[in-house]
Image (cartoon, rainbow, N blue to C red):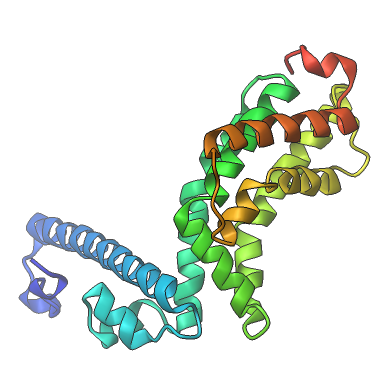
Length: 238
């Protein structure tokens, strides 16, 4: 059953309680179909963007890959830029919360940073993340809005969350970050050494798991040496 199966003429619809039930069912059906179709389009867009980049991807190719008509595609997204932005938003909405959740728990600063470092490395080295990174870097000079959209939905909220946490820890006396946002950027940079850069350049890694362990440990040690206080090693935040 599709949305077109529901009567558009109010006079032809049932009356009373039956009408309310019918309208409610129709709304739920249409909403469900709408979201499913949107996800279908985003899945197709992901494949086309990955293969052709942003500039090389056409709305026609995306429609074909998604298995929808071009008219249907434009019913959901007014332009390729809107579609790409929606794709970025969806990925960030799905992938960021598990990483940032470690900050919400009552752990020591070292434990929190260790979990976050592992999550960051896991996220930025996933195949989809590598594709997205390469698209942004290659297209940013011609389509700066793409980079802005990516920054607003991905790195910026993650940096803000870590920055706020660092400010709180500084107030509690477990960290000493005079510029929490700068410190947050430094931590994210530390997590991108060795593994992330090599994967972005399609360079081989002999022992990825061992390298990951080393990067996590080194990033946390360097960061704690710069910003940690003695009681930060063992005390659990209230």
